[in-house]
Structures are given as C-alpha cells and as structure tokens.
Amino acid sequence: MKTKKLTVAQATIEFLKNQYSERDGMEQSFFAGCFGIFGHGNLAGFGQALQQNPDFRYYLVRNEQAAVHTAVGYAKMKNRLSTFVCTSSIGPGATNMITAAAGATINRIPVLLMPGDIFAKRIVAPVLQQLESASSQDFSVNECFKPVSKYWDRINRPEQLITALPEVMRVLTSPADTGAVTLCVPQDVQTEAFNFPVELFEKRVWHVARPRPDVNALLRAVEWIRSAQKPMIVAGGGVIYSEAENALATFVHQTGIPVGETFAGKGSLPYNDPHNLGATGATGTEGANAISTEADLVIGIGTRYSDFTTASKTAFQNKNVRFININITEFDAHKHSALALTGDAKVILEELTEKLASYKVDEAYRKRVADYNKSWDEKVELAYRAENTAIPSQAEVIGAVNTFSRPEDVVLCASGSAPGDLHKLWRTRNSKGFHLEYGYSCMGYEISGGLGAKMACPDREIYVVLGDGGYLMMPSEIITSLQERYKITIILIDNNGFASIGGLSKSIGSEGWGTKYSYRNEKTGKLEGENLPVDLAMNAQSLGAKVYKTTDIASFNEALVKAKKEDRTTVIYIKTVPERKMAGYGHAWWDVPIAEVSESESVQKARENYDVQKKKQRWFL
Image 1: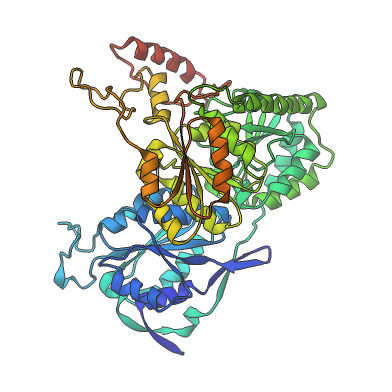
Image 2: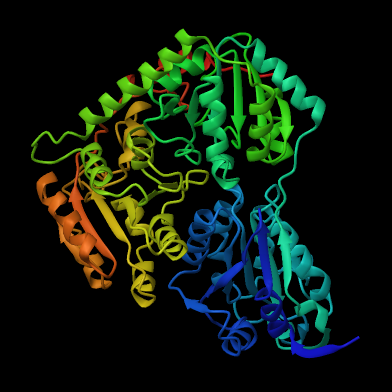
C-alpha cells in the first residue's frame, strides 16, 4: 500500500479538498474553503496545513459564531450540496461556535466544525483555557457540541482519521441526517505525522440520492387524496432543497390542491400563483389560515411542523383531519400520526402526479383559493403604500425593497418582528429569493448569513433586513465582506429596542417591559427613561460600510437606487414605528404561557384569552 507522510492537520485538509457532491448528474466541490480565527489550538496545526494548501481557500472572519452562520447562509443557497469548514482555537473560540452549530442542526444545514482541543498527551495539563473535570481527564469544552451535532468525534491518534473522515462526509451529504458535524482534534495531535494511505486523498464523489417511498404507502396516499374534499399542502424547506418547485407546480395545477408556505418553504410557488395561499400558521395570511382550519387532509412536504407552522397546534381544526407527510427524514415524516412517505420530495410529487391524473378538487374550492390569493395581494399592496407619516412602518420599508428588487434578488432575515411581516408580505418571485433562518431565529445571523448567501450567488443582490437589536448582536462581518469584496445591502431598521419581544410582551400583559433601549429611571428603577444616544449609522460607517441615513420612504427609495450602484457593503438606515402593520388572521396564535396568577389586570386579561386559545389545541393521534 502506498502511503503519504503528513501531519493530521495536513491530511485532513488534503482529504477535504478532494470531496465532491453530485445529484442529478451535477457535480461540485463539497467544500468551498475554510472560515476561521487562529489561536493556540489550531494555529500550528490547521493553520499550517491551510497555509500550504492555497487551493483550499482560508477566510479570516471576526467572530467564530459568525463563521458558522456564514457557512450556513452559503449552504442554504446551495441547497445543501456545498458548504464550508469552520476552525477555531480551543476554549472560547470553540464555544463561540455552539450557538450557530445549533442553528445549523435545527435547520438541517451541513457545516463542518473543527475546533482545536486540549492535549492528548496530558503532561502539560491544564493548558490555557482548558476546562478541567474531577470525573474525567478526557474532557473539554468541546463536549458541549455533542447535543447540537449530528456527528461528533475526537481524534486522539492519527490513524483514527482514516475512519473518521468518511463518516464526517456520510453525515454531511445525507439529506436526511445532515446538520453540524464536529471533529475535535487535540492541538498536539494536529501536528503529529503519520503514513496515511494515498487512497484516502483520491477524489471522492458523494452521490446525493433521491429515495422513493414504500409503494404500498404511496398507493394508500393516492386513496386518501382522492377521498379528500378539502385537501391542502404545507410546503416546507424540503421542497426547495430537493429542487421540487416545478414538480410541485405541476402537481397543484393538475389537482387544484392549494399550498400554504412555511418560512423555509416560502417561494415554493410564485406569490401570484392562484393556488398559493401564502404564509401559513402563526404568521399566516387570511386564506392560508382559513383553509387550514377546514382542511380534511394536510399534505406536508419537507416541513418539520414547527409551532409557528401549526399555530401551536391550533391551525388544523377539522375533527377528521388526516396528514400525509412527504419528507426525506423518517422522524419528520411520521409527525402528527401521518401516513409517512419517506423519501425525496421531487420524485414523490412526480409519482403522485402520475397516479392522480384524473383527480381534481371541486371547482368552487379552487375558485375560493384563487380569490384568497387575489384578495391577499390587494392587502399587501395597501400595506406597501406609503402613508406620508413622519415615521414609516416596517411594512412600507419591506414594500419599498420588494418593489425595487429584481425577481432573482434575495431578501434575508432571521429575527425580530421583520420575519413575520416578511412571511406575510414579501412577494416571492424566485424560489431562492426569500432566505430566512427561522428554525433557530438567531439574532446575529443576518449579516454573516447575508455574506454567505452572497458568496454562493455573487450575481444576485442580497438585501439583509434586520432591526437594531439584531444589528448590535453581530455587525462584525461587515469587515469580512469588505475584505473579500462581497457587497451586501443591509436594511437597518431602528425602532429603539426589541420590537418583536416588545410586542409579545404587550400581548401577554407585560407592557413591553425590559425591551426598550432607554436610560434607567432613577425614581422607579425601571428602564423607562429617555432613549439612549446610540448612532447605529455611524457605527456601521466606522466598520467601513457605505451608509445612507434616511428619514422617510422617499429618501429610502433614493437610497436603494444609490446602494445598487455601490461596489461595497452598504447600509440603509431608517427609523420605523415599532407597531406592526399586519394583524393576525384566524388561528394565527403562538403559545407563550402567561402567568396563571398576577396582580396586574393586563396580565389577568391576557391569561383569560390564553385559556380560550389553549382549548383549541389538538392532539393528532
């Protein structure tokens, strides 16, 4: 057997740069490079290995959490067929990645984490930044990655790499099991040399299959659909990741079954398709929530049925409702006691379309759905219309961006009140034009995720929408975007605090307590004084961004035109009123427990409403 003497770190990079993914005959490098910050724990190992492999590009980031968010933003745009490696030093550098690792796993997005680790040879222990345990010496902060990783391993001997690396790739390229993968490599082991078999470094193509479901289950699903009077589809992210948009359109145009979209599934159909009911669930449209209430059959495609999608289990009120779930993951396919079609969304929709050739929903039902689609778009138009008030609404800002942007451009968001408004209001014209990280709704994802999205599709404009709370969490990757010359446009909405949680606080009777950016009132002891003198526009400018500070929709529209011409990351700053434009519709409810006993009358009243809503929750057994 031929061998090649390399350090563990060198062998790891040599292996990773020769891994490819392939689906439907389209082949691509699985790793686009490595994000990281060097420190003790990865500098002498992975740092040296990356330095001698310039064809596996290294990108210096400013925050380890942001590195993982950027990788996720990239992989999401690439439909999970390509991603990045993220490396860190030991200790705080490693644990900084945990938050974003959780987001990757929750959202089923592949990313490889390679945190430095303590010494395998324990003679120098405890090393700087080492967490000690009285119960074990084989213990470090990297154990914290275990619950948020789909695969976790530690390389204590060089030869362990030979079996670990293929397992890393198996999980990362699995559409069913993908997420964050953590490979911990002690800093001394990274630098150790070993004679690795040369076959380990040969080009390897990982075929991403399109598995088909059980035939009997498929035939039973056909029977269920044929017998349904008011079926509906809940389209999740799996539709887009499996590139099943055309298959879905063919299916619904043939059958007339309407579609409600989750956050991840928005864009599965164009916004103006007459079968598209738009956003569903807690942030749903009038039509989607009305049809959900009546549906006797719900066909979930690529959705994990989060509480927002199901309006905390109040959305589906038909006493005879049944579920068919099309999902690549068996765990999700069986949710709600569903008839599980475990497999690839695209091929399953194609097979169902063929077997349901003569089936169509009632024409009156089809017309009702089309009417809902039209009437909702009229409501969107009203929400978009500028009212010439001193301070615009968030809906008006969203409308200005949506109207100005091209169909292929991307709006990106993750946290605050903007996701709910975007879910209802954004007119999606391209299946990759709506990019929300809402599985984890991680404040700080926006700018770094926007950078990753831009790296995946540099020819598209990326519009990052975030509030002042999300901006303050992690503006650091503005610098990385400048360093790498990837221009994104940041829509920075300032409403002096946490508008989303402030609104939620008011809805539960707590009057927005603890959500404003205000001085402390020395008399009451509460944060209810004057607004803090923070200039976020100046902050963004200090990081190197081009900044346009706007005051109304007219100046905001002018800034959009100017920003389009910029060749570096640009921030358009605007203040909005924190109140949200669009109300909830039907069973647009989210279960947030309210104090059962309180001296506050507003809390007591909110609890009464809460008890009413709780009675609508369903068990699907």
